[in-house]
Length: 131
Image (cartoon, rainbow, N blue to C red):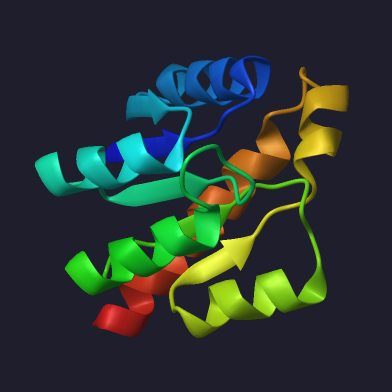
């Protein structure tokens, strides 16, 4: 399984990458929306982990781009921007869930498990809805 992580905070991106790679996932990381759109066009990702506050292109715009190109990959939003309207916009774009605040992830770097659980829930629910 190949995962695209779009996160501009290098410490958070590194933590997520290490956690996913320890579970044997193939991981690509980028720190801005423009590169995320390019990478998504070049490779076939099974899952996207997406921050909403990104340089160059906003995370919700990246999500719209992903959905226009390929509606199927699930997206886990991992962002400090946790306004209800942002979560609703993400949900409206389909196969998307919002994980707890990114700041909580940075505060507890030894606890990757809850985020891995979110990822697994999203993957299972997407597989069930497409069958």
